[in-house]
Amino acid sequence: MADSHTPKLAFVAAATPTARAARARLEKRYGAVQPAEADIIVALGGDGLMLQTLHRHMRRQIPIYGMNLGTVGFLLNTFRETGLLQRLKRARKVSLTPLRMIATNTRGQTFEVMAINEVSLLRSSRQTARLAVSVDGQKRLAELSCDGALVATPAGSTAYNLSAHGPILPLGAGLLALTPINAFRPRRWRGALLPRASRVDLTILDSRKRPVAAAADSVEIPNVAKVTVTEANDVELTLLFDPEHDLEERILKEQFAP
Image (cartoon, rainbow, N blue to C red; front, side):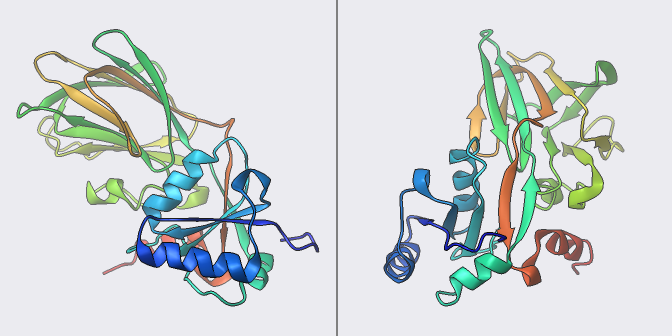
């Protein structure tokens, strides 16, 4: 951090006893203010807590520094109680741009939701979903029979997207991943890499007989008829990482994981 003054910190914690106890100790050690008054928010928990914190403060553009008290902790730094102010001074800023999902359900209602990791569509019945896929107004797949499909950001490319055999995207690649989930037809289609400025339209064919739900991170919209995904370039999220645990390096390492 460039400023010489001591930043005002707000601490948020997951609901686990371990995270709550750590929050109490850190607040006693470093002092604390409410998130609305803070210069930096320190998130204590796992990746789920980090995503919740990013969503909750999405419009404030406040830096968030996470310490892992969960399981994977891909978006967080190593937990340590001592030396926090020094770590914050040395921390590297990583800017993330979320996705904007506009979903219209079968009743004609429209919902707008942001996604940091991915927008995903998944069948809601035993029957295969049937989707039409257009990119920037041009139809690319007249019919994709599948369990679903997703559009992932680089930051989210190592999450659900990777589990669906999608590509890992470096943060600076300027790309989005469009990945099918268990594609049945066309059987050999494995997805596409798209410029980050692309508009992806996913239209559900036969949506009443073959219902599909759409999710932007953890927010789910049932019975969708059409979903449009674009990059929300009017929103910028700032994460702070210790230099030795930089997010770009973590994503690069994932490409060489055994």
